[in-house]
Structures are given as structure tokens and as C-alpha cells.
Image (tube, rainbow, N blue to C red):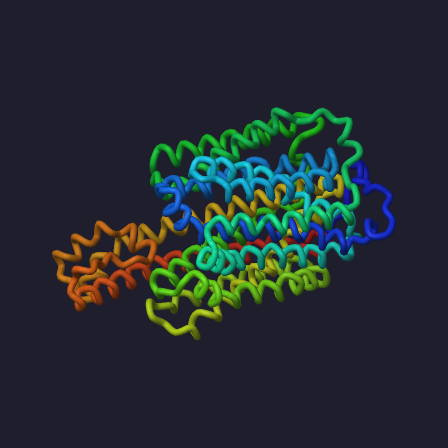
Length: 522
């Protein structure tokens, strides 16, 4: 990893003794907060159907349950890191944990959809204070030779919590209620606050305390991020070629370009553009986004396949994806060890190749294939995600000066969230497009009369979610044919999404091989 430039002030942790001098206790403390945010990110999708039924919410309302959180998170992540660098990473992290926990409880207590959406936005803002400062604290307390392994464990917690979301959410929704999906954050948050208050050292960039805070930069970055993410998450609903989608994304890009230009002209920028002089940091940022594009996009369509096409309950589907979680547990610290020994030039492409292999193996799936065809891609995906997560986090935060550790953590988290949003939205749209193009022929090939098949093409949105448009009044033979044809059409969409992620991962592997140079750069 690159050494901080001599002209930049280092962040000086407060003199610490005993437990506050132990970096591994710091890692344990931030793991609680990280686990809470990672779990929440994937568990809510399981609760959405029940939220809709209980609160009489529309599909658009349920989309905003997810989007309000994502927009607030994406808009404030770099701000959260900067606040930590300036006012103290421990303080801002604790505020983030407390706010996230209280917002979670408030969501569960809400009796209507409007406050649920509002508190999800609040939850996202406090998550943005929490997440970047987990890496910022680790960067400040771990010596360079041990930082890679700390990041590996950090990546393991992040990957596992995300992958466990569907299992935990399924159990809670099935056996308790949807509110428990949010209440579960209360004990985790309280434990995180107690442990963190006892063991976290104070850490901040002392020179930043006297600098003028970059308010225009905050406004420009938040506006640009909001516009881009809004266009991405609404693209599938509005249509990717609609004026709303293209206008929102284009306006966001213009604002972000203005932000970048402005940041080069101020003495104390929110996001120092000099960070991007590090090729490893820049490539790590791109690969982090691609990593979560593949992970969250794949989890989304895999869950549709397991629950709606194969008929498994949320818990049964979650259990079948356990190999992905277990592989992540192994891969993250292994990836960190390999990165420390051989550099990210080995581990980052290796992780991308494993994810490409997982995607291409999914091309062998059918609507009724055995579990023997399912678990190998899950293992390959888990291994790949874990390796890339540890390697890319190390290249981003490890190549930034300690003084900018919080901002670097915010940059990493922003890339992660935007990549995940793109993965879900783009792949859902791709599946829908492919299903719409092949549904009619798939139904007629399965034995559905041509006239009936044309009528059922109107149900392409349901089929894109893996749901066969059958009714109780249909003859049994017709029901079987519609189910078979719909399953085949959905598999066409799934294969298109898997092929896309496979090609992107192969391109990511090539980019890392060509772009990363040596151990000090990676």
C-alpha cells in the first residue's frame, strides 16, 4: 500500500491505554454496526410483501421503502466520512449507530406507509454516518502490515451480513411479523453502542478542525448522487429510455462533474481529487461497484427463481443459499492474506474470475434442475465476492492517507451502494425485456394454444418475477403448460442476466490485471 504523502497531516488517535490501545477490539466494535447495516440492506426485501398487505401499500410505496433508504445513504456517505475525519470518527460512528437503531425502532412502530418511508430515509442518513467510519477507524488504528487482514475480516462481516439477510428476514416474517425485521436492530445497536463506547479510541484529522467546511461541495455531491441514483432505481419503472430516467441520470452526471471541478479549486475539499492520482484507489472504486452490482443483482434474481419458480419458502430459499454465505466467510480473510502476500493484482482478478465462473454456471440452470446444479455457482460467487471485497477495500482505504481515511471509506461505501442499486435495477429490467420478447413462443412451445398465449403475454411483468399467470379456473393440463412456458421464459431472462454479469466480471478481471502494477500500488 502507498505511504501517505509527507505534506499531508496524519490523523492522530488520542493517546490510549489498555483496551483502547487494542486495534482488534476496535475491529470487534465496528463489526457490530457494520453487521446491522449489512443485514438491514438485504433483509427488508423479504418484509416488503407483508408491509404492503398490512399497511395497504401500493407497489410504488414499497419501492420507496427501499429507495428512500438508498437515496439518503448514497447522498451522505462521503459526507459521513468527512465528518468523521473532521469531528472524530468515534463520535460520528456512535451517532450513526444510535440514530440507525432509533430509526429502526420507529419504523416498526409506524402504523402507516408514509412514516415507514420517512424513517427509512432517516435510517439511510445515519447509516451513511456509520459505514465509512468503520473503515476510517480501522485505517487509523491498524499498522499497515496488519491493515489488510483487518479489512479481510471487515469484508467477511459485510458479505455475510448481506447474504444472511434473506434467511433472517424469512424466519422473522414467517414466525413473528414484519416489524421484527426492524426491531432486531435494537439489541444489535445497543450492544454496538456499549462495546464501542468502552473500546473505541478517538481518531480524527487534527488539521481539518481549523479548515472551512466545504458546504457547496456537500450540496453539489448530494444533489448529483441523488439524481443519478434516482434515475437508476426508477429506470425499470419509468423505462430506461424515458425522458425521466435519462434526464435524471444526465443531470446527476453534470452536477457531479461540476462537483469534481469545484473540488479542485478549494483549499479544503469535501472529496480531495488528489486521491484519484492513485491508480489502485481508482480501480478499487470501480471494482467495488462492479462487485456489488453482481452480488445484489444476483441475489435478487436467484431469490425470485428459488421462491417463485421453484416454490421454496423464504426460509427454504435462504437455507439453499447458505453456501454463498459460508464461502464468503472463508474468502474474505483468505483474500486479505493473499493480498498482503502477493498484492491485489492477484486477488482482485481472481475474485472477478470466480464470479464470472459463477455467472456462466448459472447458464446451465433450468426451471426444474436439481440442487447439484445450484450450489457450485453459490460457492464460486461467495468466494469471488469475499476476495474482491477485501482486496478492493484495501486498495481504496489503504492507498489513501490516514488523514483522509473517513473520506476514502465513504468513497468505498458510495461505490458499493451505487453498484448494488445498478445491479438490481439493470438486471431486473434486462430480465423483464427478455421475458417480454420470449414469453409468447415459450408458452406455445409448452402446449398453450396460440390465442391463449397471446392473451397471457399481458402478464409478462408477473412472469418477469417468476410468477406463472395461472388461475384456479384453468384446466389442469393448461395450468401445467402455462407454468412450464412461464418458467422457460423466466429462465431466458435469468440466463440473459447471468451472461451479462459474467461478461462484466471478465472485463473487471482484465481491468485489474492491466491496471494494477505491484504490491505497493495494490
